[in-house]
Image (cartoon, rainbow, N blue to C red; front, side, top):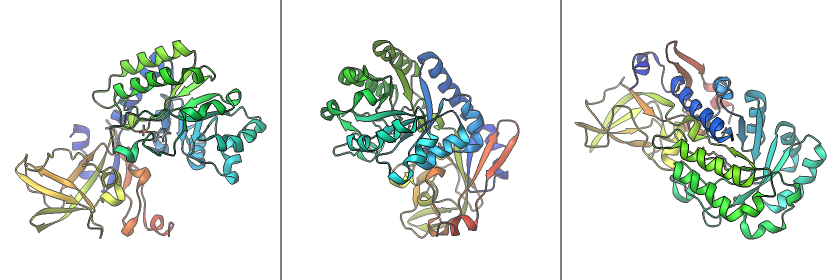
Length: 383
Ligand SMILES: *Cc1c(COP(=O)(O)O)cnc(C)c1O
C-alpha cells in the first residue's frame, strides 16, 4: 500500500472510492506525452469515469470528452469544457436537437441514422462535424470476450465494410472505429494498421479518424512509443487528424475502493462480510467477471489465512472473491481494493437499499477530502 494511503487509511469513512491524485496526475502526463509526440487528440470517455471535481486537472491534459448520449454530452459541455464528441447506437428525434446544441462531433452508427439526422446537422449551422462508425471486422479485446467485443458476430456496432460505398461521403467529416478493450500497444497498433490497410480508400475521403477507446495507455506493459509511432505513420500516410477516446486507459490503477470488515462467518471456510458489495459498488466484478486486487492480499492458499470476501446484500452471488492474507481478518479491519476508478461509481446502484460509497480525493501531501457523500434521498429518489 502506498505510504500516503497507509498513513490516512484509518481516517477514511467507508465504503469510499478514493482517487489517488498523484497516480491520476501520472496518467494524465502519459496522455500529454502521446498528444504531443503523436500529434493526435485524446478525449476522456465519460462512460468509464466522470468526476467533475477532477475535471480541472484532466482538462489541462486532454482535448475534451467523448459521450454516449445526451446526458454525458451535456456533462462534458457544462463541466469539462473543450470538445464534446458523441456516439450513440441510435439517436432519438426528441433529443437530437439538444445533442446538437452541446456537441462538436456526432458519430452515427448506421446508414439509416445518417439519412434521418444528417439534414438536422447541416441545417443547424453550428459547424458540428458528422462521422460514421465503421465495424472493422477486427478487434483485439483482452477483457470479457464477446461481452465487450464491438466486432463480435452479429454486433450492432458500426457499418460493415461491404455497405460503405453507398454512404454520403461528401457529407462525412470523420470515420470512427472502436474495437479494443483493455488492449496493450500491440492491440492499438494492429487496429491502426488494419484500418490503414483495409479502409484506406474511405480514410482518404474524410478529415479525421477516431480510433475509439480500449487503448490501455497507462497499464503496466503498454509501450506508448509504439502507439505514438503508429499514429504518426497513419497521419503521414493519409494526411488526416487522429483522435483517441480512452476511458479505462486514463484512470487505470489511479484509485481504490476502501471498505471495512463487518463480520466473519463460517461455512466450510471463513467468509468476511464487508460494508461494500460487488453487486452494487463494483458491478464489473460480477459482469466481466473478474477478481479485483486487494492490497496486501494474494490468491487463495498463498498466504497463511484464506477467506472469501462478500458483500452485505441478500444476493447469494454477491461475492467479491477468495483471497489469502498474512493474518486472520477481524471485524473493523480495513481492506483496500485496487484499480477501482474505471466503470465503478459510474455504474453503481442502490439495490437492497445499499448506501453508495463516498467519493474522495487522496492528495499526496494535503490529506483526504470527501467530495461526494450520498444518503437515503439518493436511494429514495430513484424509486
Ligand atoms: C466504451 C467506449 C470507449 C471507452 O472505452 P475504454 O475501454 O474505457 O477505453 C470509447 N469509445 C466508445 C465508442 C466506447 O463505446
